[in-house]
Image (cartoon, rainbow, N blue to C red):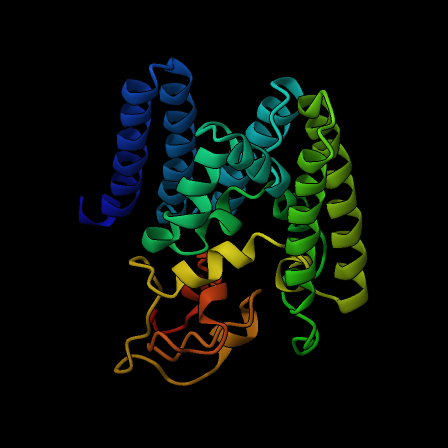
Length: 272
């Protein structure tokens, strides 16, 4: 049972969050929401342990489609960063603010950039593209993410300062238009740079929240130097260009690890 500790622990974490929010917010939706997400992610990890080829993709689709289609399109909640700013400015601890607190602000202290690997509905689509392994060195344009972060904040701030009515409806359409733009830009960048995750590396504003906390992540992949033969296969196959052979907290692109386990699956000596 020892090998199943991780999926059980992940399920326990999300069930705890589900029960606490259900009781404190007096809303059964949170019990369903976080139980479903916890079960989906735990299932993905369980399938990975069982050596199912598409384990992570299964979890990614279960969570990503739920958040995009059900929460976004059906329930009308803006789960993008604009929705976070919206709820933050209204002082409401619900929907996007809870999502960001769990998945993108405090959650990374436990599971790092796991959201990007198992739950992001943008990456869910981009991971279907043909360039799963980057074909060229990383570009020095990651500063663009700070611009998109600032634009999202300025956009929502301007709406509040202008006292525009029916902000809820505007946020819904911002969610739809924002996702269309994200997918379009993500696909264009993937084919231009021959890298499915180019959007994540250079454009995504969410990384501004994810990167600092991921530096202290409890769950991380490390290398057993006694088994490692320095073949470099793990680094070549990493979609996020992480120097996985360096066990330090300051390893190259260390806060970019999405826990996809491609390095672990392909290590010839099981050193990871």
